[in-house]
Amino acid sequence: MIGRLTALLRRELWSYFFTPLAWVVLTLFLLVQGYGFYLYVELINRPDAPHGQVMQYFFGGTFLYWLFLIFIVSAITMRLIAEERRLGTVEPLMTAPVSAGEVVVAKYLAAVLFYGFLWLPTLAYVAVLAGLLPESTVLDWGPIAAGYLGTLAVGAAFISVGLLASALCRSQIVAAMLCFVALSLLVLLGALEPFVSRPGLRAVLAHVNLFQHMEDFARGIVDSRAVVLLLSVVVFCLVAAARALEARKWR
Amino acid sequence: MIQLDRLSRSFAGTVALDDVTFEVGRGEIVGLLGPNGAGKTTCLRVLTCFMPPTSGDARVDGLSVRSESREVRRRLGYLPEGVPLYPELRAEEQLRHAAGLRGLARAETRRELSRVVELCGLGEVRRQLIGTLSRGFRQRVGLAAALLSDPPLLVLDEPTVGLDPNQLREVRELIRSLAGDHTVLLSTHQLREVEAVCSRAAIIDRGRLVASGEVAQLLRDGGLGAVAAIRGDPAKVRSTLEAVEGVGEVELLDEGQPVRVRLRGVTCDEARERVSAAVAGAGLALSELRPGSTSLEEVFHSLTAGGASEEEAG
Image (cartoon, rainbow over all chains, first blue to last red; front, side):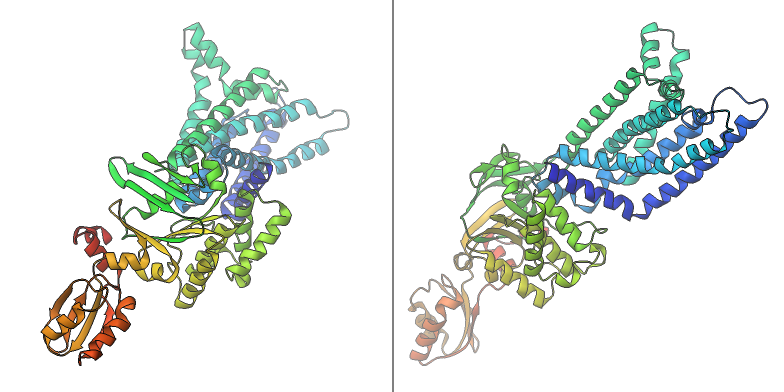
């Protein structure tokens, strides 16, 4: 089983780093993140600056973070299964002695690893901050670590949604659009909270409020409820994707 | 090795495979013949567990594709129609990936890789990207992938499409050399291919099995026998040929000179010596003797009572 997973994972990672899409995504990602980081540093330096730290804005503090996250995840997940269908490689894949679950898990892990790789260079911003700070102040590492953890957790959940979208579509473009819309709705769901009067529903909406959860992460609060929520999204989507792959290969 | 038991498969109301019962023995090379759209690919896809049957069952080594699909898949190497491969991988990496999926360990993979590369003549392209390979090489990479880990059953969907005559001969020789240790089920729409490599054949048309058996038998059952052109008196030609052992009906096709007749119930190869001896003995001159059916279309026509199969053959 480990051997088969490794073989699947290696192929996926190879395809990520071979195709130009990955490098385009990486470049755009760093461009936007770098610009965002510059803006937050400038903002914090103004005399009338709001309360908070740079990395707190960097992680989930603005809509820029969410929009770009959704875009990136749609781009890196759209081809995962749709591409296998288009090329017809789903046929040798599913007639090899591997299960749909193994295929889905390997593809998921590859996408999460690539996502992690995208964020890796942003550690340089942290290094810049640490280097620029005057002697008297120390960087608060807790919120930064929690911010990265939250970003990874939210990304991992988003990627599972993208993978499911890719399993449901034959066309990559349709998969990307489906993923983009589903993730946008997921993110905006929490924003409904103030407009709902029923207390039960309010509580549910508060529970799925990703804005709030990410703000907590960025302030250094790792809430187990948020982790459980994101983890259940992952489990649900991966199981559904495996079922879809199993059922739809027959069409 | 393979048992198809009343196998049917439909897609949203369209019946692609209709109540097919057929067996392939261990070590046989069997050809699945039929025009495009006859249900060949569907049949192979059900057998390789890519899609489940709508009703009936298929067994490989006694294992059902319904309930023991993984075990079935472990025993077969499959070359799907159109040879789907990853264009961004090198030939070698594609094969290593396929070996990994089959669960081969590192040392085994290395051994198997050099074996199939050698067997399929891929030495010169092993470092080349699949996307840049010619059709013939892609076909051979697909074949090499199916041969990895030396599975006892090989299922090949149109294995020689896109090959040039030299490659065609090499691949056919390769398939022939697999007989004995391996069971091979291949699909094709070329009768010559079946004659060249298969011991037996099954003919399907519009999802139904219309004939199966040894290739010579099929040609005979095709009812098209042999066609002869003989100089001499038509009545004498007829009576001479009717007396030849094995010849059933003699049908006069053309009474001009030479007289053209169709001999039913025999194949050209079987009848050649007896017919030429009888014709010479009767003082007639044999100017031509050829198989009555040289193409699948002709056998097909005769087996399916003509017509309908051609509409789908397109």
